[in-house]
Image (cartoon, rainbow, N blue to C red):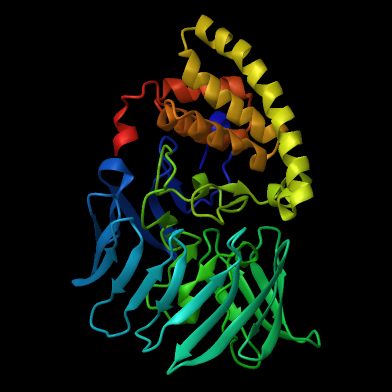
Length: 400
C-alpha cells in the first residue's frame, strides 16, 4: 500500500489504513478479509460481523459478537471497572487509586483480589499480592532498571530478554535455561508461545519492557492489555477509551506505527529508540533530572525563537500562524531535542492556562509528524490544509 509521496508505509499489504485519520479500514488474515466501520469521533462501530457501541464519554460500552454481548462498565472518570462476558462467570473487575492507576483486580472470575503496588515516581509495577483472611501472599516481585529486568513469581525467578521494540522474546531461569519464547504480529497479537517445560505466567509480553500488562496472559477472557491508565485491544490496534490528551484520533494506537513507537503511559506515543536516548535518562535521579531540565529548556528556547520566524513565513503563504507555529515547534523538538523534551511543550501550555486545548492538540500533531520524512514546515502546512490542526479555541474537538 502506497503512502505519502509514493513511499511505502510500514504496515503490511494485508491491512488498509485511512491516511487522514488513522482508522483501520480492512484487514486480511489467513485469507479472510475483515472490514471496519466508524461513526462519529472515530468510534469503531463494526469489525467484521461484530458491532460496538459507546457511552457519552466515548468509552466502549458493548461488543456484540455472534449474538452474544460483552458489556464494558466505566466509572465517572472513565476508568474501566468491569467487563461482563457473555455465557460465563469469568468476568473481570477492577478498582483504581487517586492517580487512575489500577489498584486491584479480579480476573477471570477470581474469588480474591490481586493487589498492585507501583513505584510512585514512574509507575512501574513492583509487586502483586493477595490478602486472604488477613494473610498476605506475594504473587510476584519485579525488578526494574532501564525497563523491566526480571520477575520473581511465586518463588520462581525469571529474566526477560527483549527485542528492539521492548517485547519479550524469551524468559530464562537463573541458570540461563530458556523457559519460554514468544513471537508477535505487528500490533502485538501473540503468534507463538513455546514453553518446553510448561508455560510461565507472564503478563509482560508485548512491549513488556516498558510495562505493557497483558491481562489475557493471566487468564482474562478478553485478552486486553493495560497501558498504565488505558486498556488496549491488540486485535483491533485501538484503545477502548479516548486519549486523555487531545489528538486527531483519540483511539488510535501510536499513530499506526507499532514497529517503531510505543505508548507505555496510554496517552503519548514515544519512539522506542528515544526511550534509550541519553536525553531521556535524566529522569532516573534528581541530579540527572536537573541536568535534563536545563538542557531541555535551552533546546526548546532555541526552537521557540525560530518558530516565530517560521510562523511569519507560513502567514506569508496564507497559513494561520498560531496553529502552524505550535505544530512546527513540536515537530522540530522531536527531531532536535528528543521526544521526552518535546513533551515538555504541553506542560508549558497547561501552566499558561490559555488556549491549552488548541495548543496541546497542535503540539501532539506536530510530534507525530516529527518521525515522518520531509521538512516540518511542509508537513505542518499540509496538516493545516487537511484539517488535522485546530485553528480556533471554539473548535468542537475541544469539547468532545
